[in-house]
Length: 620
Image (cartoon, rainbow, N blue to C red; front, side, top):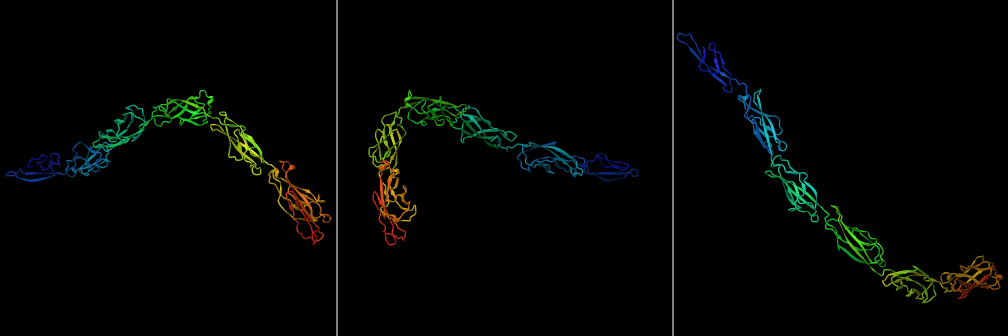
C-alpha cells in the first residue's frame, strides 16, 4: 500500500495505486514546488511488513490568474500652472500577485496633451505648458497591465488639479479713456469707471485694488476713487485748469503683486458762468467834433469776460442812425454827417451791449449807456462859384490890368483870404480880383495860363478853383524878307510857269498876325500878264510870253508886297514889306552866255529885282 510519510493538505495519494492527486488548487505564488515523501509498505511478509520511502517532487507551473491591483482606488494630484515641462506630478502604483512576468506591471494612460506616464515607474509628468485660466483640472485614466503574453490589466482614475499662480497682470479696457466734466460738477461726481480684469481665476490673484498715482504728473487731491470708480474730490475751475491726466495703478492682490497703469484724461468743459464787463461801466461819455468825417472811428469800447476762450460781440440796441459799432472789436464809427446847429441838445444817447459766445448753458450779456457830445466847429469850407473861371488878356496890356474876379462864400465866416499858386505873372487882391503884375505877356511864348486860386477861412479850411486865362495875340511884328540880295535873269523863251524867284518872308507873330500873303504891287509896263506871284509861297512865275526885242527897258523892276493877316491893329494897318526887283530878259536868237549879275537891294520897304539877258559877246 502507498501513503505519505507526512501529512500534506494539498495532496492525496491512492493507497492501492499510489496515484497522487491534488486536494485543492495549488498556488504558484505560495509555493512553486512541493516535496512529498511517499512510503510503499507490503503486508504479506512472515517477518512482518516491509516498506520503502521515495520523495516525489511536484513542480507547480504558474498560471496568469490575477489582475493587477492599484494600491489606491483613485489618485489626486495638484500642480502649479507654471510648472516646467518634464516635472513629476505624482506616482501611481499597482501590484500583481502573480509571479514572474505575470506579475510584472507596465503603466500606460489614455492619450493626453498635457501629461505623460513612465512605463515602468508609474510617474506622471508634465508634457505641455499648463494654464489654470484655460483648464483648472485634468482627468486621466491610467492603466496597469501585467507582462503576460495575454496580459491582464486594470485602470484607475487620476485627477490632476492645476493650481492658480499669479502670472497675469490686470488688464483694463480701455487702458486710456477721455471724458468731459463740466467745471460746475458737484463734489463726489462720478468722473469715470474703470473696467479692469485679471485673467487669474482665483483669489487673491484675481482681486484688484486701485490707486491714483499722479494727476498732471504730480500728487493731487482733486480726484479720489472708490475701487474702480473715479470721483471728483474738489471743485473744478476751467479758468485755472482746462484738463487733467490721471494715472491710476491697478494691482492684483497676489503674493507677488502684478499691476498695470490706466490713464483717464479729464477735459474740463467751460461753463458760461461770468457776464462780460465793460471798461468804464456803468456809463461812458465822450465828445467829438461835428467835423469828423463820416466813416471815422470815434471811440472803442472794451469789455472783458472772466470765462476763458470767450469771444465777445458788440452791438447797439436799439440801433443808431448816426453810429455803428464793429461787432468784433467794439469800435464805434460815425455813419452820417453831423451838424452841431441842427442838434438840440447837441448830444446823442446810445446803449451798447457786450454778448459772450457761451452756449453752456446760454450766452450772457451786459450793457452800458453811452453819451456822445457833439462839439461845435468851423466845419464849413469856402465854396467858389462858379467852380471854374475863364478869362482872356491881350499880350500888350501892362501891369495892373484887371483880368477877372473870383468869388468864394463860407457859411461859417465872412473873412476869406485869396491866394494864387506860384504865379509871377498875375496877382490876386483881397477881393479876389486878378490883375497883371508882370509885363511879360507874350502870345508867341505862352498862349494860356491855368491858375489855381485859393480861398482860406480863419480855420484854414481851403477851397480852390481853376482860372483859365487865355492870352490873345497883338500884331506887333512886321514881316521880314529872308534874303538881303539876289540876282535873277530869264531867257525870253522861258516856258509858262517857269520859276523866276521865291520871295520868302517871315513874321514873328503867331496865328493870323504871322500869316503872310505875297503880291506884286508894282508891275513894269507890259508885264501885268507876263509875271504872277503865288500869294502863299511867294513864288514868282512866268505866266506869259517874254520878248526881248519888244522891251523898251531891260532890265525891268517889280515891287513885291509881303503883308500879314493881323486884325489888331486892323488888316489895312498891318505891317507890310515891299520888295522891288529888276529882271533882265536875254535875247536867245544868238548864243547865250552869262552876264555879271546885278545886285538886288533889299530894305524895309522894297526889294529891287533886276533881270538880265545878253547877246553873244556883250550885255546890254
